[in-house]
Image 1 (tube, rainbow, N blue to C red):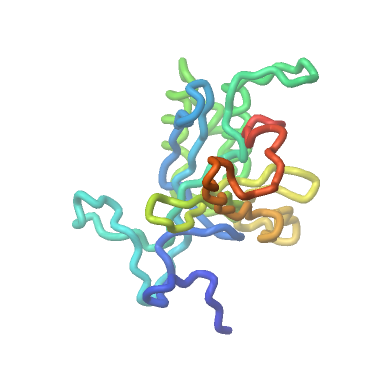
Image 2: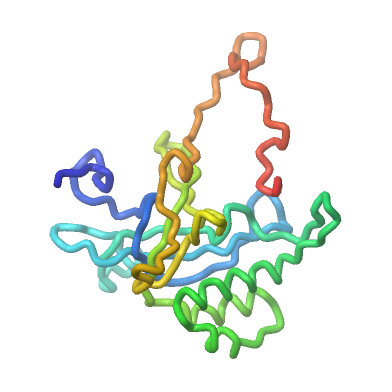
Length: 227
C-alpha cells in the first residue's frame, strides 16, 4: 500500500528522524539532562534507533566528525522517558516526590520490558547521574515495541520538529513492552489526536503591543509540573 507518513517533502525518501507513532526501537544511549528553564528539573533521554529500514534509506552519520563510522541503519530520535521532567517537589496533597526515586522507577520499568531486572539490581551508584551511566551498559541494543507521543515545536528556521516522549502508563496500556508480548500486548495504540500536541503559532503583536489572539492564558502557564 502507498503511504506518505514516513516520507520527507524534498526527496520522497524515508526521513532519517523518528516521528511519533508505534515503533520498534532500541536504545543506543541514555542521558540525564538538566532542563534549560529549571536548574532543579531533569529529563531522562533515550537516544533510540528504529529497526533497519533497508532499500535506499540513508540515515544520519553515527559520528558527524568521523564519517568512516558509517550511518545509522534505522531512523533515530531522542525520547523523554516521561511527559514531565523529574524534580523534587511536593504535591498540593502534601505528598513528597523524590526525583531520584522516580528515575529509579523509570529504570525498573525499562528493565522489566527488556527482562533485565537482575542486571539493573546489580547496579550500585553514589549519584543518580552515575546510576544512569551504568544503565547504558545494560539497556542498549535490545529492540522493544513502543508508543511515542510528541509535542511539536518550531526551530529558528521555521521548521516543525517533534519533542518525543513516552505517554504516561495508565489503564489504557503501557508506553513500551517486549517484542514478543503477542496476545498479552498492552501497548498503547498511537492516536495522533491524543498523542500529538500540535505547534500553534502565536499571533504577532499589534501596533499597541498586544497580541491579536482572544484565547485566554493558561491557568498553569504551560508548566510541566501541573500533575
